Amino acid sequence: MSNKIRVTVWGEFRHEKRDEVVKKHYPDGMHQVIAKALGKNADMEIRTATLDEPEHGLTQEVVDSTDVFTWWGHCAHKDVSDEIVARVYKRVLEGAGLIVLHAGHFSKIFKKLMGTNCSLKWRVAGENKAGETERLWVIEPSHPIAEGLSEYIELPNTEMYGERFDIPTPEKLVFISWFEGGEVFRSGCTWERGHGRIFYFRPGHETFPIFHNPQIQKVLTNAVRWAKPRIIKEDVCPCSPEIEKVGPREFPQIQG
Ligand code: ZN
Image (tube, rainbow, N blue to C red):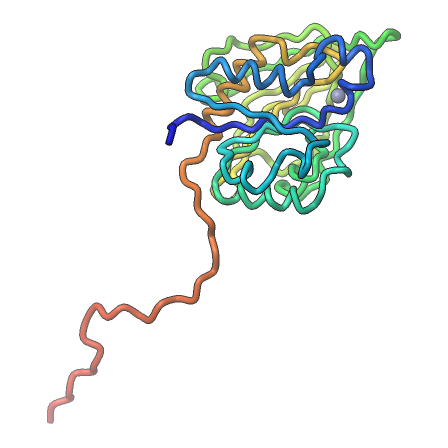
């Protein structure tokens, strides 16, 4: 068995089929660009899965052999079956990693793991929808997800996401975004659920070539390595065994 991190890159893959601008940036889908970027890492083994495949490409076999999932969805969250979400959820609690990208903040799997509604503010600015500048400030430079990055990543054209982002307080906040319009946003957040590690990463609006950006790809690589399982373990609720005998159990005789 190989020691590589087995990554399943999940993509909704709907916008890319019907929107000309998105198609131009991602003719084969965003998931393929992400998969290709991660595939350059010798320590990773990548496969992709998309919504319209049988079982959304997430059969029991695929889920059971995934160490880290990445998840991009937007317009079709409701089309993801609850049964498949439960399957991925269980795997994350057992120790698999999950990296939720951009509009995945409203996915069933993310909301289920967070327990909040995960809403936020958004805007694609400009008459021609050119967006606005974003600076993703690295506020935890010693965190493994920030390895090799400079002080900030600048994206010249992005969609704005603003606070309040309705999430539980992150266990680590690795990035905060500043936008030209003045808003700020918690753009890189980590949590643990069960034995699994979760990372939410904000960039990735479909009408901009964000996933082609080498610095964004670097963050994804770091995040996969950070999120890989330490153990895979199903926590059940077994009936406790009989008490272990570790010493005398009888009261001493009282003399006299
Ligand atoms: Zn978007």
